[in-house]
Amino acid sequence: QKEVEQDPGPLSVPEGAIVSLNCTYSNSAFQYFMWYRQYSRKGPELLMYTYSSGNKEDGRFTAQVDKSSKYISLFIRDSQPSDSATYLCAMSAVYGNEKLTFGTGTRLTIIP
Amino acid sequence: DGGITQSPKYLFRKEGQNVTLSCEQNLNHDAMYWYRQDPGQGLRLIYYSQIVNDFQKGDIAEGYSVSREKKESFPLTVTSAQKNPTAFYLCASSRGGQTSTDTQYFGPGTRLTVL
Image (cartoon, rainbow over all chains, first blue to last red; front, side, top):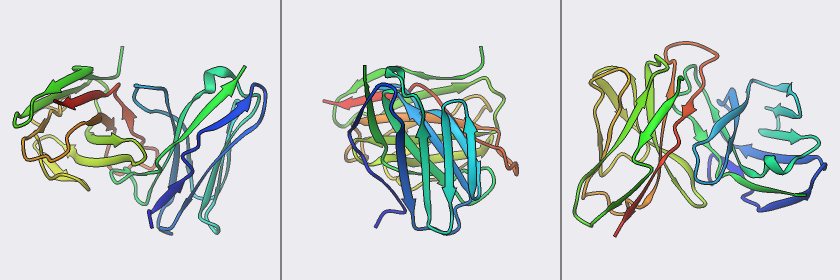
């Protein structure tokens, strides 16, 4: 069993819909949780960073962490075609996160 | 313009040849990382360096080597010992040290194809 599980998709939704992306993990030591967005043939870019449990909102994006369930989510409101990309969750147990563990990524397409 | 650069963008190599991928950052970050990305497997850590002249193996270091002679540079050599080198290689950097807000920033990647 992988330490981090992420549904690879592909996931297709109509423009304007709310998108929910999720990861589950098995290592209870993880405390730092990140979401990266990766466009085709590009490097990942950091979208959201959260510590421990709770919610964090940034514009149309909301990250949720439920440590009791070992489950994290990224919600995208009012989805746009420019949101079409692969979304990677990542997490680490310690400061400095030199040992990031990544999910496999979910490929998302927003249909105009 | 601060950031991470990787070169070349595309690289072709014949079997049995060593090849070096370049990674440079001007973010004044102490820590640098090399990842490999394969379809369906996410990113896997090859090597990382938290300070100049020091580096550690990641999860899949076999067949790779690195050096960290300068703070801004962290080249990766893919040797002929790497059995399946065709992949997308990503370099990243972070401020490093004991900081709770440290995050990794990625370069644009190098796609290596072995012919």
